[in-house]
Length: 202
Image 1 (tube, rainbow, N blue to C red):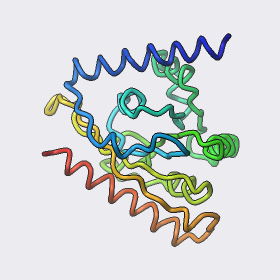
Image 2 (cartoon, rainbow, N blue to C red; image 1 turned 30 degrees about the vertical axis):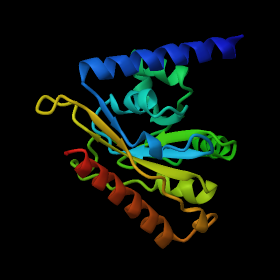
Image 3 (tube, rainbow, N blue to C red; image 1 turned 180 degrees about the horizontal axis):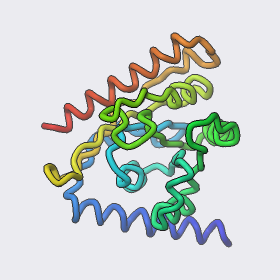
Image 4 (cartoon, rainbow, N blue to C red; image 1 turned 45 degrees about the horizontal axis):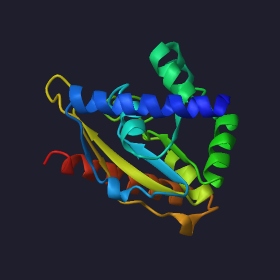
């Protein structure tokens, strides 16, 4: 019964978020045809604000579990979303083995996870080094990566555009522990995110 109730809540919340983004931010959604309808997927995008996770949840048409830093649970709204969509809490600035195992288990079961390579909001602008978590999960699990470009939602550019790129397949590297491969995959994923943001300007 609890599982059914949560599914109903997820359906209602997702619908409410979708309507809110469409009305309040004139959200434009591009590239949905690129999102695989089944199988494990790792969603990743640039991170600008607290709205990015609910935006992806509302528009991707796939259930996904976000890897979210524990501090976000101090915000009641984000904590509620984390509960409803079964976010995976991550301890900041340390290797959280529990979160890693949980994420890999979900991907093995054909589920979807989502995270931001920047690691924090506007990480690149702050000079933060891009995290290799997306590449790590892609190489370890063989899951496809769907890059997302997110623009807008600011005072200067109110309208939000989210663009889902074509799935990236790194299954040929599955199981590799080569640091060069990890860096290469990370750079390719970020290049795709940058490109999608440029397309979003059109």
